[in-house]
Image (cartoon, rainbow, N blue to C red; front, side):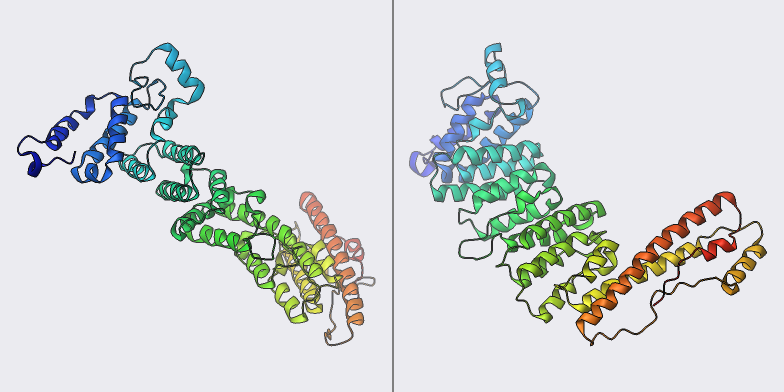
Length: 455
């Protein structure tokens, strides 16, 4: 193939080879494999002459034609004629036992060098070959090469596989397979570019990951248990690469997964406050409907890291969204000595605002009565009549700078009022539901049944 006109004049081997290559469309599959292997041995000459490109195009074209056929199995031997478009029943049965119809060529092409596989994948993508099958071949190629490859060869194979997968549609490869590659990559020093591509692919599918996927040990030389920085990079890729595909459903899935992860890493005594806070605030508030799980994780973190200063504890608690804490969580927080007093007050104030809004909503949702005058009269009597009672949630000023014990006693009193007011709201809602059905105005007994909640 190195014989040019300068060597052999008008009749040279290179021109004869080019003329022979023009008939590639009529070659059998084993002949194509033989030609491809010769091109691999002399890749520089084959590339410059265009023979390698034509060989790869013929291979991809043959795969496209036979993707719906049932080709027989091949032994990957250059002299083998076991893989042809027509085959007997025995070879077809052998194929069904070893490969699926779409994967029949994996073994034959797994002997190619990483550079040729890279060129093959690019040709397949340009010819719009099935990208799911391409991704399966790359995973098969990586596994088959790892049996006898050295560390450097494994690194080269992984980089080619990752770069090839990155050019495909994200939906063509499962999140589980990507995490499988990641665990192999951790033991090899692959290029930063390939590592970033792998992390971006995983991040774009964070809503399909599991807690076990994320529990990756921290790098050598670090004291904390799990690789928190890696998970933060996944989240960054999820938020940046997701774009318009970040539906509320996907966001909630990732938020639920992160709640589990944060709860898992919170007991780590070596986890720094900055990393813990980065996990808590990584997702927007809208990703979570309830913050109870995060509250419990913060509770565990404060218990394990009892040496935190008051300022550091306040910084942790500022990450909480008190408005999205349940009543039980707010009550628990108000009695939790590990949390700063200001956080306890803020939780109860937030709960009071929610209850106030709930009462306002209940008032606005009262149905129109058959006789509005009677309803107004009843309300006036309920306000002026003897035995009528008024709800007082809290009207005094709270001195936070006072003694902590007095403050907590005061908070417990407020907590009791909150609980009683919740019961009252439920009772009022039930009464209003009955009134909507009966269309009858409330009586004096309704107003007198309200308990008195004094400050």
